[in-house]
Image 1 (tube, rainbow, N blue to C red):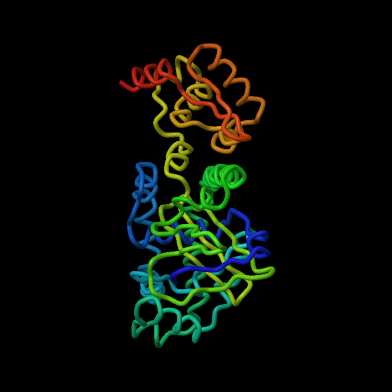
Image 2 (cartoon, rainbow, N blue to C red):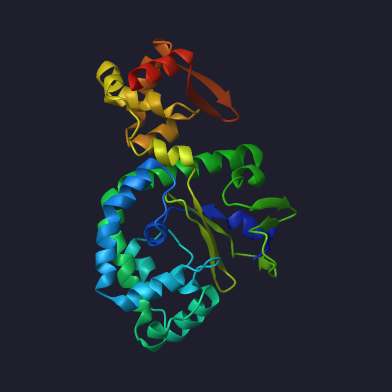
Length: 320
């Protein structure tokens, strides 16, 4: 993969989007690899893994197909069309329409082609059925929370973009990825020919809550970089870690906001993380400031709120 060269016009077209299909593919990755990056995701994995395994036992070809698609260094391209932020069913159609020859070619590039999969037919629809099961039973019930986390991450990145440029906005998206300047984006350290993104091509950045990411493209004009959301946002938005005693003392809403302010956040981020209205969040922040538990400061164009020592002591004491 190496690096991509993005000209000025393509960079101007680049944007962040939230994708139901990308979130589902990342969840499938977590289920298949049995990986979790924080306690809330471990709880989700423990709850969903038995059902996922039972589903695959009914279709051994689909089980081998998915296993082969997640290669050690590469994901099969048919499974990861570049997201456009469309509804799940519309983006899934691209996977379902994948022909058997395309699927087999992509599987060989990702890892290997199992004999049973080589003899099977309708591989694109089989893979789409697996993704649809994961979306229906493992992702969609929790999608409003996941979407808020992804939107909060987009807010963080776009603020960094406005204040400090692409180098800051893309920092930490993926291991070994970096903005090198002069229109060059290093994707990884693999020795592969660079890709040229020019004109209306643009680049879509897609946050997902599981700890997995990938790059994807279709032809010369659709490119995407899927990346895991900021870890603190992912864990904080799950609603875990609010001590019961603190919620009883301050009220559940105020307590949750105080816990989330372990690191600085804007009111917009808090709205995205909690699902509360802007007025509600602003009102709770006012009370917490008057109580001497949080402070606010300006960072570039944003106003950030953060917990002070008294707030830290209160959260820690309630946790004990």
